[in-house]
Image (tube, rainbow, N blue to C red; front, side, top):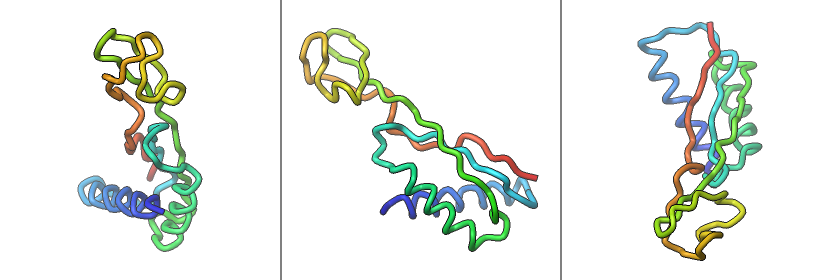
Length: 114
């Protein structure tokens, strides 16, 4: 379950940020997660709950997850299409000469804190 290491990295990143932007309590963290990122949202939530029980600054905080829709562009015909529905094959010209443009990201979008 790589979600545990992802949450560990998110908390490390936030802790580093809080060194120059001090907070006393984190209420929530919002992550934007690509729909083809390979990350399982409920595993992220489970990992968040486990980590936040160990860190007083995060105790009781919520993890919010917002999906990022995946889309792909065909380099042969220029078609932009839904990655989940068609994967790597362009639905317009059947080319496999395509590139994922969005949907594999994992970003810290927002932190609500005191």
